[in-house]
Length: 402
Ligand SMILES: Cc1ncc(COP(=O)(O)O)c(C=O)c1O
Image 1: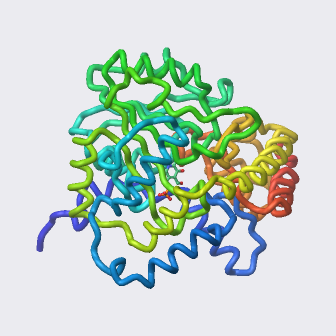
Image 2: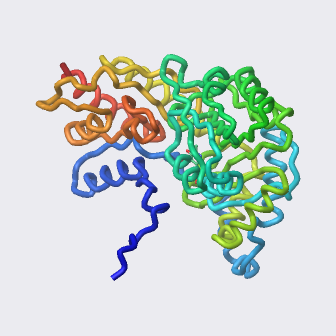
């Protein structure tokens, strides 16, 4: 009998997605009849706009879309993404610099797989979205955390980044608006960070998936446009999931210099081939249409954001800086760790989140999932009434802590 491990070391090292795990537990409790309110979801609670669905229905009827198409994406969609990028970010790219992927997630994987050799370091600002570490690790890269906290609204400074840079640093990962914190870098901050990266010859991988979800005077700045000095060492990741409420359609993209895009396309041609044509045609309708659907969602999210942040900050021991983008609040719950609550003394935000799920039937994602224990992530992409009820239940429970 072989004594070799059944699952490879590389794949065994991948952790379960903590956000999906919380969601699964909440759904199981719901299925068992418990009135759980979930703040775990990373998706808009709106349906995909009708004109986008209609484009997909029409595409499904066309025999040419029943066949394989180019692995890197339908030419008309690549062109529309290039046009949209010029429209929204002022960044001029050719269709040949676009690779259409199975959601933003595949773009993340392919970007790191294409840029990193074993031992190459990637600067990642913590708290970070759970997928990045796994994609970096799988590519053989080494993640170097740049840890931020609520005192700066989770924004990293050039000084912090410089302190983490070594001669092995190849890539800076820049995410604004950020999942999980909702932080948004100002134009000046973006320029300063971009110039620093350019000065040190770093690549910048920038995830712009929340570009249209910014609130209260905050502005999205594409680092690619703001810092021309970066030259062609920029890879942009984006997708239709959050802007058009299309998480289930699985269309994202990667934009970069031609050599990187060509190499990533080769990888995709063996891994998955083309993204489902019906979904690509839906994405074409989305990116070539206007932004009125996201404007409506933004209004609802902004209202919920304000309600949630106000209610969270009224809970003793909870502090939540104002998130400026995406649809998440990221409060610190550090003061509550170790306090007695319903006969227990949670020793981590993970244990506190479990207790809240059991006692208040409210699901939140603990900060451990994002590289910073002592915090919770709450999505405000859920109905106003559920939001108020969920945070009220949490407040009632947490006010018993002593
Ligand atoms: C920061 C960030 N980037 C990328 C994605 C990928 O989204 P998708 O794969 O659904 O397009 C997500 C989804 O949660 C995200 O939060």
